[in-house]
Image (cartoon, rainbow, N blue to C red; front, side, top):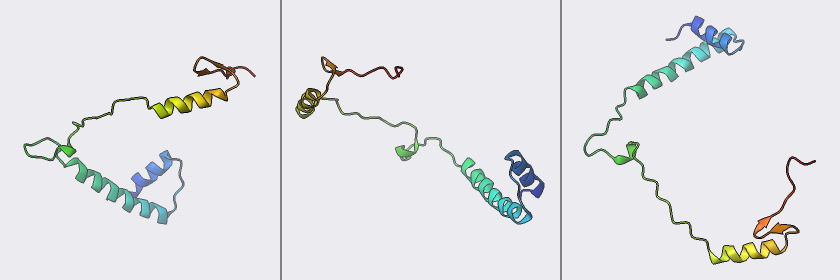
Amino acid sequence: MIKKEEIQHIADLAKLKLNEKEAKKYQKELAQILDYVSQLQKISLEEKEGDNKILTNKIDNRFREDIPLKVQAELRKKFLKGVPQKKEELIKTRSPLEQ
């Protein structure tokens, strides 16, 4: 169990004022958290033969090929027709630094 002095020290570092009831509550909660962390530290993450590959850091990222769709090209043309200032297929705007 964590000492009340340690809880008070942590509260002082966080610039918190705790009454006796709150200090006891946080003493219990912090002890539970630290117990849980110690359990997590005991878990072995080393890969063993036959282990499920989901638990390892070897994740394959699979991306689809980026192919422009005809629909997108048609929508872009329609959109650009309504733009007041443009240069080729770019929309011309004023500089964000201008006021």
